[in-house]
Image (cartoon, rainbow, N blue to C red):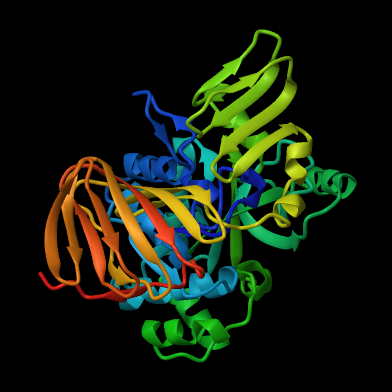
Length: 438
């Protein structure tokens, strides 16, 4: 089974836990049987592999998410990188070309595309296999999964099938309606459009060549920034006549807001949290190294992270995005392929960061033109390389680097470092990478 997971967006509706680097699908908020926490993408990947251990999973994503994906899923998952955001049709065209030209997937093989972050049970992934098998038959060019609606939602588009059989042709698509119109659609047997569909690789590859002038994957990648922003539904699905839909009646939740996310949480509190016994229906998530005390709250959500603190009524939590858009977008925490970092303090002429490197990992070998840096090793052992010179470091050591010098640090054990950046122009863009000679 070839599965493509679409991983996009910054998840601003789940601020302050999500940001441009750690989108909502990477937040570790779901408790497993062993007591550890996992993220949406880890949960979905684990479920896929449980249903089909041989499944080939490829994630279509932005460059900013590569480190988080590698950190949470390892190196076995395929990644199709979008050079920039161009909506779902260009993303699916690019990943289809990637599967064919880079991964060598034959044109007749089925591909199943779905979002990276649904909250579902294993029957959803059994359905993905069925969807792929149906696409392989060639009876239709596209086979969609239609979610049986549980209420007249205004958040989803609707699929109108030609009948109420488990598998039927699609009559039409409807945009997100108001509640009254949604009731009418449901009365007609309409299904939620959950963005899940299957096709034989050849079909989308031909559609891509029909709508975009390109030679192969590499050529499409180079031209990607010039492509029109357009959804797959609008560019392909709504114009396709040979299209079927399968009904899915299992559990399916789109955890796009705090309110829906808390419905899926096993416990009401995560982190250093103290709710008193007068709190009712309150969910609290704390990622800070200080306690959060809540008293007398009802139907509320409290979330604290290095990005900020949110206190909201559950119903109002769905309307957070325009307020988050007004905030400064300084990323305060992120997981990287080598570990993680957390911003501790920012002034006009300095930034202080806590860096954690996983054993055997290192930063890129790089330099900065406009800032000096000081590394204070607070835990672990490793090796620092400055302008080609190696030096062993351990707890208590301090290393100073002037602007312009090339440097990196390699972790022997888990290594924790307080990094102080000093300069008038501290910017993420002030970084030049170099090849490290072994």
